Image 1 (cartoon, rainbow, N blue to C red):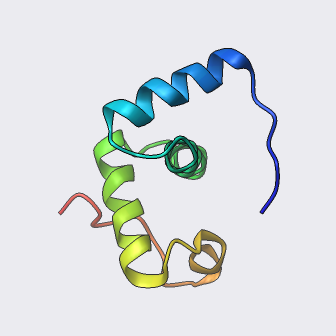
Image 2 (cartoon, rainbow, N blue to C red):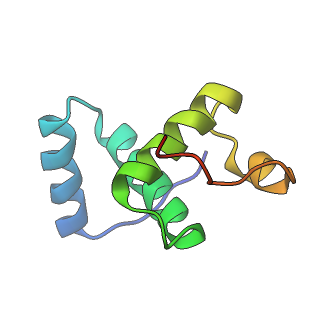
Length: 81
């Protein structure tokens, strides 16, 4: 666990997002970081596909994305099915 410094505006955005989506501020930040990381890794996927991918990762391994990306069988194909 570490400390990440963010701007006051981003903190306010996190507060609003976390309240709207019934998450803690930390959980909201982590969710946005996961989605952002996946969007950079898989730029061709849309938000719905990224969400499905995130759900698959969580189901299969507890969101250890680094471990999954090292597996040759890990591909985003079929995520939207």
